[in-house]
Image (cartoon, rainbow, N blue to C red; front, side):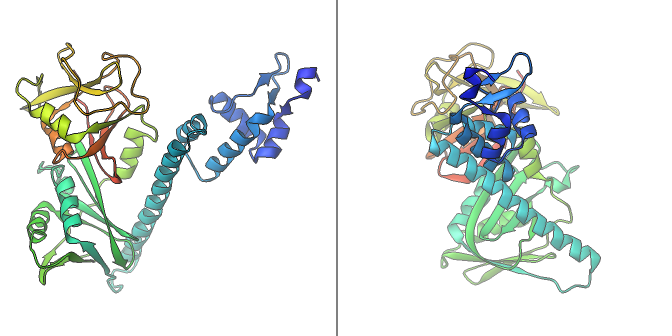
Length: 380
């Protein structure tokens, strides 16, 4: 052993100190997550410093709770920025909770297949009337209208232990919103037809009650507001596994996460002379706009035909990972109408998450991690 190596920990010693196996340490070295301080040029043996014990323990803990590799790498890079690591941990915890709720719903469905005569179990919820109305508004625009895809012609209602999640998609965009509330009963889901969703939205405008009472069963959903009930029969389709699609398309750690002012971007998108190009899809022509970054990492509209538009989007500040490369470093094209729909009323701070010009982009509310829209980009 050399004098330098005598001051280092062997890979076996680090394994014992951190809780990682030797093979796991080798894997994280090959993955670029936790590289040794020194590798013997002759034997290939790995050596680590004392300062690498705590990072290795962090890796071990994240590995035990099933954090994906990209998330582990991101947490390690930001371990001296607690707010960033907490954001990653919160997102991973939500994924775990969602997975458990999915398993419970699927087991309930399997039990009904095994014993169709089993007594129907209902779940009752009490939700804020205005919050439920806002959630319906946040997803309604994304409901599919293709008669060849009836499974997308409604809004998925997913009951969770402490509220309900609404999901809609037409393949080109996906919208998710959530309402917290009081829940009595097991997790259950139902696919409401769009006509029933529109009736529900009108019901939620009734004055005289602060809450909406919802009863969800396998064969019906009843919503009561101010003593007026609305009953709908769910669609008989299995909604796509949107969580798997989100994990595959968006990943865990976006390359760009850019806070911006929703009202400012909406104003820029609706201003006279906004630069657009036109693309046709399935015989229908759409206006396409392009988003980019200026030298300060601020969000801006750029010319989708290749010329950078003058000025950024007022009131927008660059976010994590959003500053390098100047205005030409990133240009993402998207259907203008779809982007306006995703912005909603355009009020308040929003966050744009994306990984590049051909990857889906997400528009999130800064104050609600459960509410977001995902848009497919347009190839220029």
